[in-house]
Image (cartoon, rainbow, N blue to C red; front, side):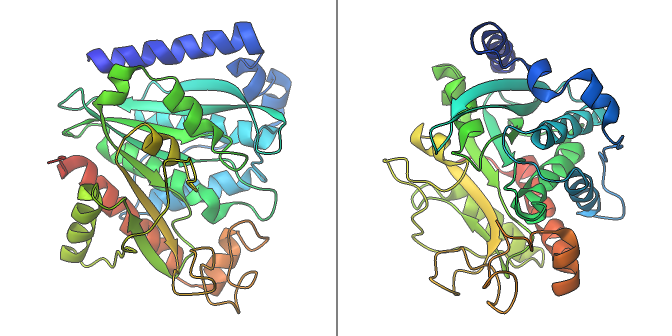
Amino acid sequence: MKRTLSLLALLSLAIILCTSLIGCSPDAWVATDEAADDAVTREPVSSPVGGYGAAARQHIEALTDIGPRVSGTDGEAEAARYIMDAFGQMGYAAELQAFSAETDDGGMINSANVIAIKDGDSTQAIVVGAHYDAVDDGLGSDDNASGVAVMLEVAGLVKDVSTPYTIYFVAFGAEEVGLLGSDAFVSSLSEGDLADIVLMVNLDSVTAGDIAYAYSPEGRAEARDWAMDWAASNGYDLQTVPDINLADDEGGGTGDYEAFDLAGIPWLYFEATNWDLGNQDGYTQVDPQYGDNGAIIHTEYDTLDYLDATFPGRVDERLDLYVAVLFNLLTQFEMP
């Protein structure tokens, strides 16, 4: 389709510019052949096994087996290769969008986004995004192998299914050092491509928290309301926080939805946490007797083993919920 071809051309141009101008070609960033030879061979999972969330769980296991996925490191690069392979096994022609950008602390970093496109019944599009980098505490199981895993399972489910909109599945690099991947992606789009995006769905830390949430800015919450209604009608508990202030016109957002918000694009943010605890700011995900005073993300407790041992069944329940809601959203929802 026209817009799909336009975006692919832009991505190809971005990769060429990276190679020629700032020395961050995909080959240089992802790994040398020697490093690839030393890497552990993994078989990406592309379809559910036994119900919603089963494939997602295996993606979490594979991503955390890589070890730390710190922005700009070999670990992040290996995770990108895994995601590329997973999309490829589903039949997608995934693109690597390499970029170089300044981090929050003023340094420069090379990273990349991994992008797969599913043609829909319209050239209008929904972007589904999840960052795949992590901090060096723990293994980033919740933050954010979980979001990537949900995205990958849903990408497999919708591959050969009719969808109202074209879907861009984007695994963002370098989120933890300044939301750099999502900014690079939005910056690469033409005005026409931006105008065609009706919604951005952000998946971040969806398994550890006590409560499963869906957020959207008030006044542009059609997708959130649809998701919550569908969840309630199908036995899932999906909540929201009314009038939540997660983004503003000063760029004060806390996730990869921010660049889309600043571009005027509606967004839907899926996250599991507990807004009733701690400072009621969403950072205390569980009872303070667990994790680091209630925090799982950005701590040594962000591992699948800890979550399974401490909250039996929670990871699988959250994956089931978010895969089910997102799959049905992408196949049924249409913006009024």
